[in-house]
Amino acid sequence: MSGGDTAGRLVRPFALTGGRTRPSRADFTLITTVTAVDPPPTWATRQQPEQQRMLRLCAEPIAVAELAALLDLPVSVVVIMLCDLLESGRITVHPPHPVSQDPGLDMDLLEKVRDGLGRL
Image (cartoon, rainbow, N blue to C red; front, side, top):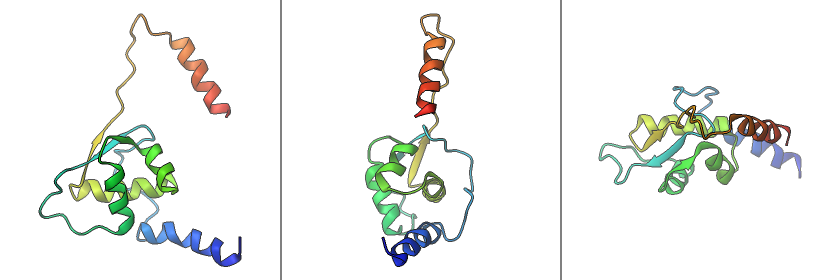
């Protein structure tokens, strides 16, 4: 990879977020799902190409982490862009469902799975 390629890759996320480094809302986690509003609100402004691609990928509910992977963008950048889409009425947000203390749920097993995934 040449030095120009590296510089372009570093500038791109900065440009996509308009220089912002923090989301304007705290609605998003890695497992939050988002869905595009169809049809979009009549008052919604035209979106940049990356946001239009996000909206196409959000035609069906999709997790924030999966969306970031498909877009090949850092999660932090995707979240900032999702905040813009949420504030413009273009997406809906579905927070993860809390894990209940179901007697049939093996919390010990879930914790072992979580710990194993964390070591990957």
